[in-house]
Length: 138
Image: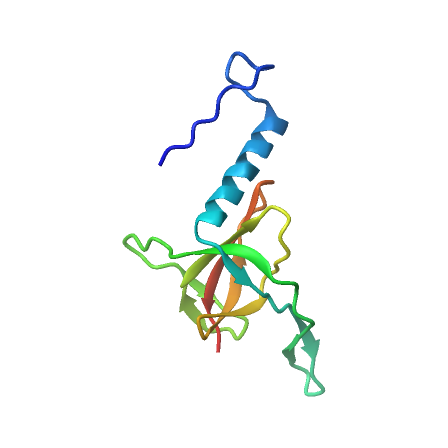
């Protein structure tokens, strides 16, 4: 399937300009998420100091459910290995894609199809989407 976006009337040369480009990319992101959406409830966690001198993660109030898309990563020649909040290295299981204004943070956890997952790495914010690398949790 191809998506064809005509040149805006005010830009006959074909360059839409930065503001228009962001709007177009946001619409494409929403359309892509809508082709295979999942309602994800992320649970934020913070590091809490322990009396023994270490720390443990404490779960906070779950965020409101958000429509996102879970994407299976392409494992070319080498798998992507990430370090979880427990210090254990695991292979990336999924990529989580959300709108530019979605609410997610590193170490948030969620359950999908009976499996618990943790956000291990966030991609650089580009203005039209938020992506995160996800590993199994627990």
